[in-house]
Amino acid sequence: MTTNSTILVADDDRGIRTVLAQALGRAGYEVRTTGNASTLWRWVSEGEGDLVITDVVMPDESGLDLLPRIKKIRPDMRIIVMSAQNTLLTAVKATQRGAFEYLPKPFDLKELVAVVNRALTAPRSAPAEGQPGDDDEEKLPLIGRSPAMQEIYRTLARLMGTDLTVMITGESGTGKELVARALHDYGKRRNGPFVAINMAAIPRELIESELFGHEKGAFTGATQRATGRFEQAEGGTLFLDEIGDMPPEAQTRLLRVLQEGEYTTVGGRTPIRANVRIVAATHRDLTQLIRQGLFREDLFYRLNVVPIRLPPLRERTEDIPELIRHFLAQGSSEGLPQKSIDSQAMDRLKRHRWPGNVRELENLVRRLAALYSQEVIGIEVIEAELAGGAPASDAMSAGDGEGLSASVERHLREYFGSHEDSLPPPGVYDRVLREVERPLIALALEVTRGNQIKAAQILGLNRNTLRKKIRELDVSVGRGGFK
Ligand SMILES: Nc1ncnc2c1ncn2[C@@H]1O[C@H](COP(=O)(O)OP(=O)(O)OP(=O)(O)O)[C@@H](O)[C@H]1O
Image (cartoon, rainbow, N blue to C red; front, top):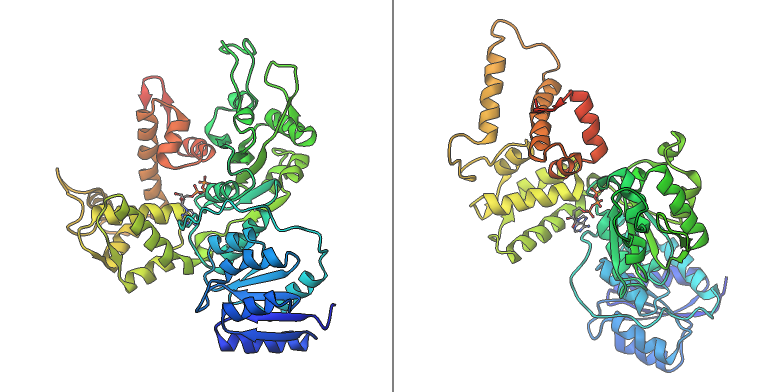
């Protein structure tokens, strides 16, 4: 440990100054503290201090604005930024402007001391990341300040200056694609293209040609040469979504690109150099797929260089109010009426399990904004929505006849009523759900004329899930249509 180093601390909160001074003093450092940016700046410009710990919001100036100025006159100075703002943008800006580390408040003092030790012993040569593409756009790409999301922001900020391959895992609707975009938008390749391809949405036999392109005549139907996504993503980022659904041959080809940096088109011979950053994502458990022999282990290790796990929404319910405000604001900026949600309704939403994660929440909020006339949404509406029904009261224009939930309820009452002298047989819940699922899936297949990919999209189901359900529910796909 480097002792006798002097640490300059700037924070307008006296309590934090005291706590930091004690902890760092105990760790053997000299500490000077101030409550404003101008004093910190004076100390730094007079050549004092070996390391700076600064808050972002201070009465006279933002700590973030001070960063480039400090780096200019003292490029070797290590700076640790702490902030209670805790957004991705703060993490990204701090890193872009040369902070050694970013610590979202509240943080563990032990962690702070560890970071300080690390900062003072890390080799000096590493220059601050290149000049920021700092367009100061205040639009936040990712919403949520829960500890879990902050950990993700820190990882994203650290990855900004790198081309490392990233594997994003998380349940459906947790924001994997959004994170992939943020990696691109704040990364070195932000001026290049971002190309996404979803393995579950493309017929398996076409995946290789979609990815790598094909030559004229490479297979029946290949009437001319076509470029693949690798070529389209040249100089940028290629996002391989639902990587767990990649067929084995395509896996082998992808592995080769990752090993050799080169690929050939389908039917082509000349190797083409690939210059793309790969970000992959899946909601499936790849280790299990590996065990089942469905995913190549060697490919997994090539892709899993930096794993990012997105937590399901039910593990970060403290983000729900902010997400709701965000989606309501988004709705009103698109012309939907401005709404709010009362506290009882909010509590109920925080208790929901959100199997569809942020996507489910987003859809719900959009429905609330579009379908209900009341300005403040209360608990009854939320209960009705979460029960999967149509709007509770005046809401949806019932138009011609009863709404969906009313009609379902009527059928259920009939069903229960038909077992007058005894209760219905057990297992009603699953049976009723199957009764609803079956016609729903059949209908989706009917309107898409049996196109499972499109049907899966309409339903918001994974294609494999849809296939499974078709089998399980025995939805017959006959010639004359669907029964
Ligand atoms: N943290 C977040 N802040 C704001 N919006 C979010 C956040 N996370 C997800 N969303 C929104 O939720 C929806 C689903 O996100 P996304 O498509 O990135 O999820 P996904 O994990 O890739 O889902 P899938 O596995 O089903 O493809 C999108 O409309 C996205 O904008």
